[in-house]
Image (tube, rainbow, N blue to C red; front, side, top):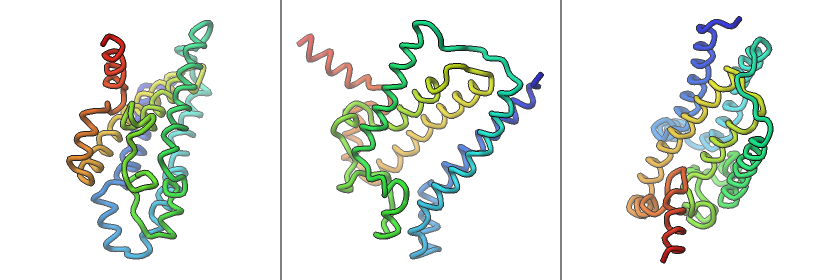
Length: 215
């Protein structure tokens, strides 16, 4: 039987990965590195993506080891499976729709190597996207990620539940941190966008549609 201390350690490993992942992309860190490194800084985004992917093996391997000794605490089965597949499709649509506003080469860090430009995860034009899914929520990728971690697996084990909770919190915190970057970069324009569009849940979009129907 797996001890509570082992699960606590598992949670700590996930939290360490999340904190390190966020710290290395923080404006304070990237700004300092850009000044110190100069031209070689153009490789930072690519190196960051590679490191983030490889370091992800630590919590994933730990989770797989735990799962071999666990019993499922929840299983998506019966008609709720339809609900799960609907949510899973929604998450994929959010990723696909959100990706239309970004350049994959910019996200991977390949564009920076050629242009030596910093990346705030902006659109092709250098402006933040407000059309399409970005007119419903300000962070479609984060919302898609939250939905995905709760619907990607049919069976939930204690380790799966811990992972889903921590990753969901990480996406919410990541959204807040990203908001600070964009607000500092765009100022009043982004502030107006915040007032018009919800951060994660499309409450303002739904409210506007209901208001139009009633009106």
